[in-house]
Amino acid sequence: MKRSGVWLVAVLVAATVATAGGPANAQKKYDAGASDTAIKIGTIMPFTGPAAAYATIGHTIAAYFKKINAEGGLNGRKLNLIASDDSYNPATTLQQARRLVEDEQVLLIFAGLGTQTNAAIRDYMNARKVPQLFVVG
Image (cartoon, rainbow, N blue to C red):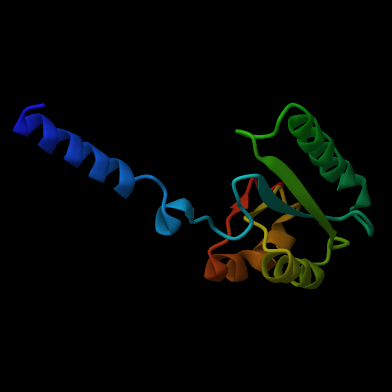
C-alpha cells in the first residue's frame, strides 16, 4: 500500500474510533419525561366535580394513546399518559400541575381543560419551561 493509502486508512480508523459511541457520545440528552423508549405526558381533567361530563375527553385521549402504543408507539416510543383530576378547580389544577412536573416529571401537559384552570398554571408552566399543548376551552 502506498504511503497516502496508509495515511487515509489511519484517518478513517481515527474517525471511526472518535465517533464509535464512547461514554460521552452514547449519552443522549432529553428533557425530563423523554427517553429512547418512552414519553411521559400529563393531562389534567375534571374527572369529578361540576364539569365531570368533560372527563370523556381524558378517557378518549387515554384510549387513543393506548391504540398508538399497541401499534408500536411514536417512532418506537411508548406514550405514557398520566391523568390527574382537578375537579375543575384552578387551585387544584396548580397542585396537580406541580405534581405532574416535579414528581412525575412529564415532558408536557396535553389537552388540559378550561380557561380558568389553564390560566392558573400558565406562569408556573412557563417558569418550568414545560409546554401546555392543545389547551381545551
